[in-house]
Image (cartoon, rainbow, N blue to C red):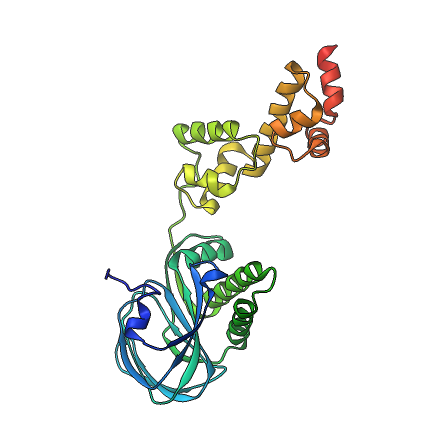
Length: 295
């Protein structure tokens, strides 16, 4: 066992009857499991994930210790317990209960925080809360259980949307987020700029994502977009579009290919897309541009 236990290892320390698992539907970095537990007195090592416990059935007095003294409260349906990651915990309860567990990876929480706050997080901790009554988390838990149980069409998309909603809600209301100092807002180093430009030219015929470009410089997408705007004076998407137009111009000047072929080679979805973007950038159609080059 490593420093932190995994989702799969948790039942060794908190044995219960597994009723449902989202592994076949949702992403592994936001996983849902439903357990039925008999009265227990357990110790759980530090977990690699954030843990949210949503009580579904049964009521009991719950005693828990994370750091410091024991806390005690009454829990049942409509109540949620939060446990931040990387903390050992003791739990003790006296009646049968059924609960939903959300296991949320630090990677998901960091990515969501970066997108939600437009800043890059240094660290995230959930508040140590034994009992909260939050209808949003109860509703999300019920909907996730329904999606996993029924296996309806579009279930994965619905599950992922609910996972995102839960992550944002937790960050807004129940988390302490420390942000990194702002990265340098200047231009890219020449070597990075060349790598970015070469990557775009070599992949111009397909859709290039912001995350791909950010990975070239070891930046987050938010950091990359800021630096790109400073260096090139435009957003990454606008720059890539301008390079697609230039690639189309090269083909129009030297090739006799059909316009629909040039559109695909230059990274446009079809000829209509090429015409629309070409006119927006050059105020002329591709056919007119080709004719002017020949004349």
